Length: 188
Image 1: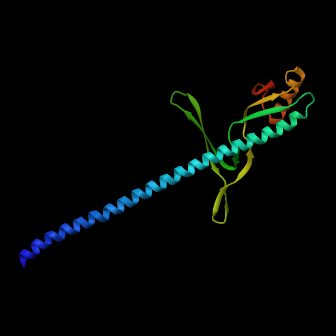
Image 2 (image 1 turned 90 degrees about the vertical axis):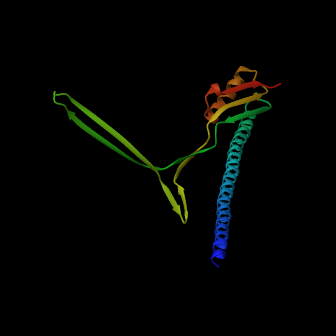
Image 3 (image 1 turned 45 degrees about the vertical axis):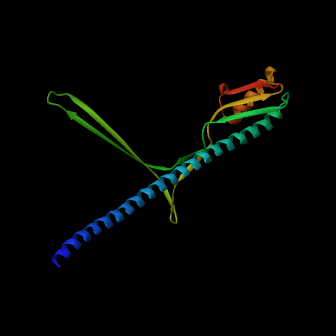
């Protein structure tokens, strides 16, 4: 019997070790596959966020182009118009912040009679969060339209100096963009 226990005990120990390798292997494999799944999901969401931003930019550009086209075609001497507006980014939210400013002023005097004043200022800003049920969102003060990089206008009648001036003035005032970012060219 003693021999049987020694023989089977060794087999039992090997069996326990083998089972533990299998169990731990599955646990680590499961957590690794779960991590890969999460990374894949995050990548997919990032792509859709980028696509959403690009669509917002395209929507702004299209809206500006359509409004400008209608307005410019109403100007005397301007015929058919093609407008291209290049927008910098998506709209920006200006968030409410609580700011705590601390100022500390220290006067020091050394043994030789020299004096110096040390001023230290620190600012701590925290975004104001509003709770709506279980959801927390930052408090938005205002939403700013995106900046405009440049505008191209191709129009019949733009070869006349006065008409070109009117087009540039209309675009700069409508979009609040400097005149050096507006190109006006005559159409064939």
